[in-house]
Length: 88
Image (cartoon, rainbow, N blue to C red; front, side, top):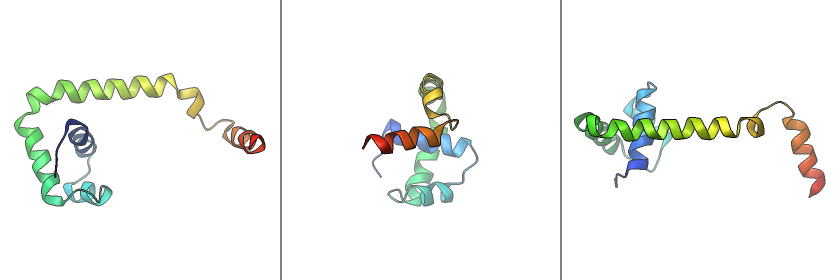
């Protein structure tokens, strides 16, 4: 498994939310179970230096969601989809 910070971030977030290594491996078929365990172990060994990165990614995600909350809201979704269909 080639580990990069984006992959590590996804794995750490899933693990912190309660997913087991087995569940993570099932959710990401391109990853092998041993690699998931290695990534989680790497995170625990380097948590002090990686945590600022993981936190900044969480903040970036929260800002992105809040900035586009209205466009992703389910209220009026059917009408927006129908309007797009008519425009095709």
